[in-house]
Length: 123
Image 1 (cartoon, rainbow, N blue to C red):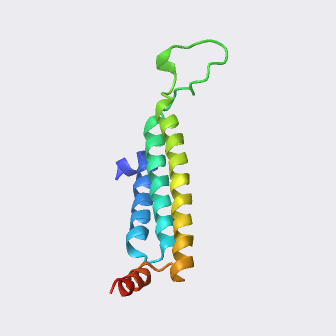
Image 2: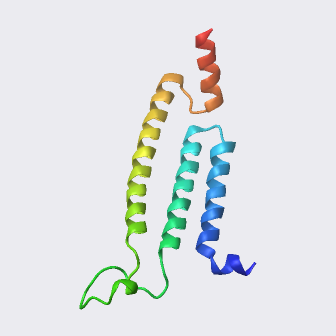
């Protein structure tokens, strides 16, 4: 139990990922599925940023003098998460645009109804 208290960022990330995954799998509404996917993205970002931070080290911004490599936090995980956020935002925008087109064509955002209507058209 002590592990969950000391690693509360990681624990929160795992809980958020579970919530997002459950939302993605249990709902038929496409908008709710996209929200679940965004919750999962956020959980992954939180997890990696929490793992990339080292307590007691400074941000890799040199103000007065260079303190040595061991005095700074590695900036690569943060840079990768920034790239991941950009990819997540563009993926979300694309998924929402596709959802709008599906709604215009089928008149619903319920995945089961869309699959039923699509199945009727193929017969």
